[in-house]
Length: 186
Image (cartoon, rainbow, N blue to C red; front, side, top):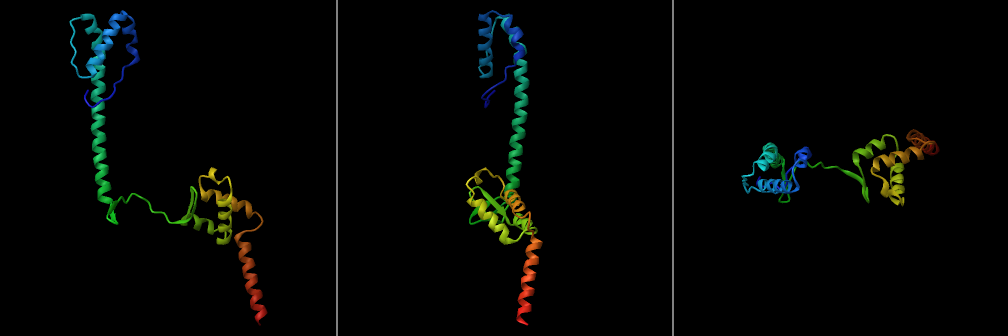
């Protein structure tokens, strides 16, 4: 059982161990520990040998299963490392895995950030000024540490703030202002 730091001793051996005297139970336990530490214990005591045999068979099955899993994990790790190596690029003399997603950040503070994609989603419904104003408010909000997503928080704050005015209202006001400015020039 080299390279193994532990083993499983199943509770169902309790029925066998309970039928042994405390002295034999202690000998059995020492025999088990000697076996799992590759000391190749031997005994001339038939009772101890009979009690140990099913335990030894289970330990062998568990060891075989563990060795197979260990080998599979080694192979999977090597395969993963090879794929990462094949897909990596060199940036400033360092190998960088291409599995790293590069996200363009529109705004970041404390533990929160808003990507440009998330900003664009918000900008379909709200003006840049509205979004920036809400982001400023969230950044200055004392309890912003409890928020996990700046996108979701800003979306909720914008929805609450703009129950009376929408982007269309702002657009209409802007058009009216432009039209009025054009009429006064004539």
